[in-house]
Image (cartoon, rainbow over all chains, first blue to last red; front, side, top):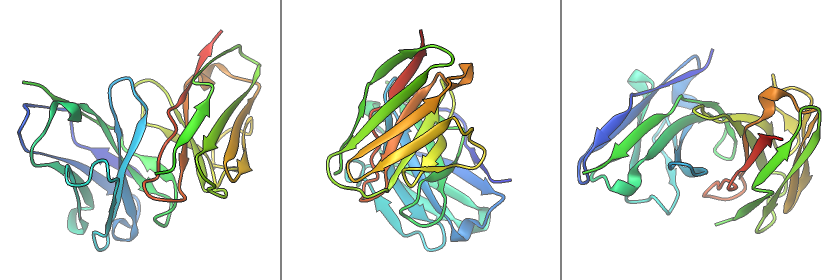
Amino acid sequence: EVQLEQSGAEVRKPGEFLKISCQGSGFRFGSSWIGWVRQMPGKGLEWMGIIYCGDSDTRYNPSVQGQVTMSADKSSSTAFLQWDSLQASDTAIYYCAKLRGHNYDHFEYWGQGTLITVSS
Amino acid sequence: DIQLTQSPSFLSASVGDRVTITCRASQGITTYLAWYQQKPGKAPKVLIYAASILQSGVPSRFSGSGSGTEFTLRIDGLQPEDFATYSCQQLHSYPHTFGQGTTLEIK
């Protein structure tokens, strides 16, 4: 069974560092694309980008490029989303999701989401 | 970026109804379109991909159609568990944008 287990909710202050995780199981992590989707409070879904877990090839949405960093660790089957300096506008639920196959495929499996709250 | 515009944004319907949600793309995307359902407090779930292919395990009352710039999601015989938010996503060009969502409410 494919599963994506995300790290727990976080409360941080503006300017702080944060790295959240998404651990996969039940599939070949190193041959998979994992994506991140943001959902701001009461809003729709926003595609942030995808990473190929085999070689960490990434595709970022220009709207977040330079603001976040996606990474993946094959040894622990875990993908990460990182902020070096959080802003209040980063407050949202972040979902990781596994693409069905190639990098133009849909999100077939989703994590449960990680709520990030950024407030001074 | 390719913009996806869903209509309507809100829809009220009754159990047993047939409903149609439209997703229009700002440029042609052939059939690189997926539909997702999201319930409050839950992650989205894929219903349809490649515009018309039903995801395994999804009830057959859901169907998708379209190509190019206009797509529809149809639900035949609404069930109580279908009241949720529906979003389309294009997979033709990066970034793989989503529509703004359509909230389906019980009338």
